[in-house]
Length: 379
Image (tube, rainbow, N blue to C red; front, side, top):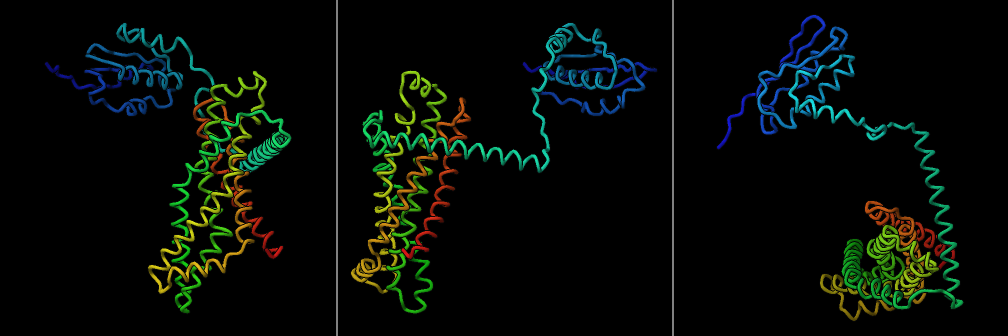
C-alpha cells in the first residue's frame, strides 16, 4: 500500500543574531526537495548572525537525503563563522552527525586542479624525456648483453617460449597481414591509375605497385600492424607479470628477466618480420593485379612481366632490411614498456598504450632515416 508523501520545505526565520531553520514535510530520495542554495544565500557573509538552530516539529519521514543537505548546510555555516546547535534535531540525526564529525577528512584527499606555469610544464616534460632516454639506453644495453649471450650459447631461456612467440607473431598474424596488404595494393593501383591513365600508361601501374610495396609500403604496413598487435601483446604480458610479482620471483630464483622473458620475444620478431615483409609484398602485388587486370586493359601476363622487370633484388633487400629493423624496434618498445609497468591494472593499460605509440614513433623515425640514407647512397 502506497504511503502519501508530505511535501518538503525549508524556511529561514531570523531573530536578532539568531537564525532558525524550519524543516517540514518528508525528506526522501524519491521526493522533490526545495533548493538549498536559496537558504545558503540568506546566510550572507555570516556577520549578522551568531548562531543557527533547527526547528523540526513538523518534520516527517527522512532518509540520507536530509542528512546530505544538513551536512552541507552545517559546513557552510561553520565556514562563515556561525555556530550550529543540533540539539533540536531528532536523536537519530544527531547520532549520524556525530559520526560524520568524529573522524576529520584526511588532508590532501581531494584532488586539486593546479594550473602550472608554462615554463614548469616544459621543464617537467624535459625531465620526463631525459628519464625515458636514460631508461631506453639502459634497456638497449641489457638487451645487447642478452643477445651476445645468446650467440655465445650462454643465454638461459626456454626454446619452447621462442617457438610459441614465433607462432604468435608469425602464422597467427597472417590473416590481418593479408587483408591490409591486399587493400594497400588496391589503393596504390587506384591512386597510380588516376595519373597514368591520362597518358595511356596503365601498364606501368605494375611498376608503381611492385616498387612501392617492395621498397616501402609492404614492410611499413606490416610493422605498423605488428606494433599494434604484437608490441601491445608483449607489453600487456610483461606488465601483468610485473603486477603479479612473477618477474620478481624469477629474479629471486636466479633467472635474468632480460634473457628469460625479453630475449625470446625479440628473437621471434627479428626472425619473422622479414618473412612477413615478403608476404606483405606478395599480397600487395596481388591486390594491384586485381585492380589492373579487372579495370584496365592489361592482361595478367603483362602485369606479371612488368612486375618482374621492375623489381630487383636490391629493392627487396631494402624492404626486408627495413622490416627487420622495425621488428627490433617493435620488440624493444613493447618489452621495455612492459618491464617498466607499475603494479596496478591501470598501469598495464598505460604500458600497452605507450608501447603502441612508442613503437609507431620509432618505426616512422627509423623509416625516414633509412630512406634518407638509401637515397644518399643511391640504393
